[in-house]
Length: 110
Length: 115
Image (tube, rainbow over all chains, first blue to last red; front, side, top):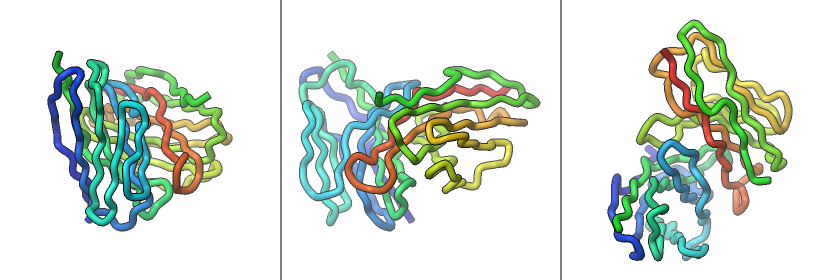
C-alpha cells in the first residue's frame, strides 16, 4: 500500500527551530511537496524536493532522502504566524495525484 | 497573477437543492483539480481535468458533476447532496507534468454545509 506518516502535533517556542518529519512508502516517486495550511484556509505551497539533499527558502528548508523514504521540513526563527498544519505530499506514478500525509499541527507558544 | 479564485466562499444548501461551485485561474495552467477536505484531514482528490478533458474521477458519486468550460474555468455542479458531503471544497491548478514548477496552487475553498 501507499503510506505517508507525520507526527500529529508538535509544539515549539517563538524564535526557536522546529523540524517536522515525514516518512513515506509509495509505489513510484516523482517528488515530495510541503504545504502549509492555516485553519479554515487553503493549503499554500512551501517547498518541493525531487533529488536528495536540502532545499533552502528563507526561514524554511526541506530535506529529502529517497533511499530512506524520508523528508523533513525545518522552520527557523519561529513566529506566531507559523502556527498551522504542515502537510507532506508525495507525487507517485501519476503526474496529477498526490498522496497526502495527515498533516502535522504546529503550535507556537510565546 | 498566482491566484486561484473560488466562489462562493460559503454555501448552505438543502438536500434537494442544485448549486454550483466556480473556480478560475489565469496562470495558464492546463491541469485543474477538485478536492474535498474534511476537518483535520488532508485534501482528498475528486476530479482532475487536463487540457479541459476529465482525466481522473476518483469514484465520486454522481451527485457531484464537474465541468471545464475552458482552460481557465472549472465548475462543480451539486445536486441532491447528503449532510455528510459538508466539507471544504478546494479547487487547485498546476502546470502539466512532473518536476519543479508543477506544484498545485489552491483556491481559498468553498465551505459547504448541507442541511
